[in-house]
Length: 363
Image 1 (cartoon, one colour):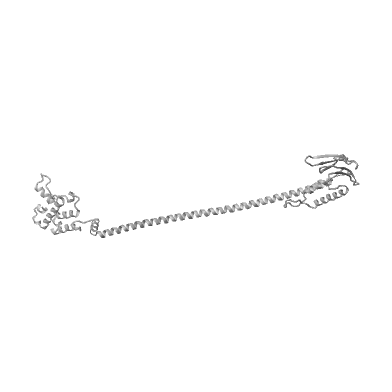
Image 2 (cartoon, helix red, strand yellow):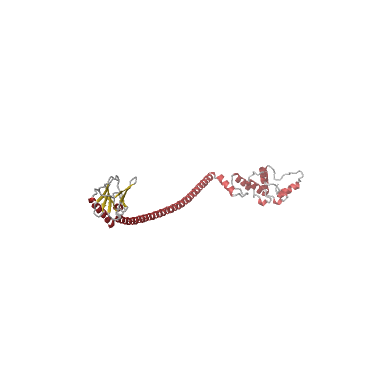
């Protein structure tokens, strides 16, 4: 029963009333119950008619939520309270139902984009699958491309960082090399300075040594003169011998001999030759005069000591039998005694009185 029938509005009866009845039938098919039923025994017929007139019934999905929304929309449109809001004819409601059965949009229900997309996919499954595959492929390619781009970007950043680190390390290495080079130059300069200082010190030491040797030479020449003046020819010769070049002598030692050295050497050698002619067979090494210059004592390499008369040059005493070289002669007791000594492992010395030539003695 339509609302206009329940309200006894006979002038409104028409095809729309039949459409309402078809909608109520569809309602019963969908829900398994009539739209308005007497659920309470106390509900009277007038009250039931008023509910029909008000359209007071639950929506099909309130009874069964599994009912498709398009079918619910067809049913509710056919059972609209106002006749003008219903389908114009029964064929229109049949067309909508056929559209729903054909999985096509219906006029009574405004579908969402997602529902339309799902319907298009169901109707064009091959295209949908191809499109889905294409989208999936595009998504995969985009994902791979994104990953590749990110990886390349990360690699570029890593390479840039490595290059910067390498550049910094290279700069540090160059700085360290330059510092090492500067240290080497400084060390070479310091070594050069040390070498120059050492050379200067060596030269100064050599100069000082030369000066010292020169002063010592002068002192020895003065002592040689004193020894000569004291008739100690052997001491004069010993002092001269200190400066006579010998085999194996260091070449860098300067020869200090001057005129004075050759002068005293000539005097010493001329006296040795003269006294040798007077009686000595070998060279004389020591000569000593008495305090009054009247006697002369000599000692030669033939290991003899002779006493001479300084005025006449005659031999007055000869002491034989020495087994060592006499190195010191001294007159004592106003020239009446001559004393001798020799430097050996065990120093030896002795004296003898100056007596005539006929009294030659052994030590």
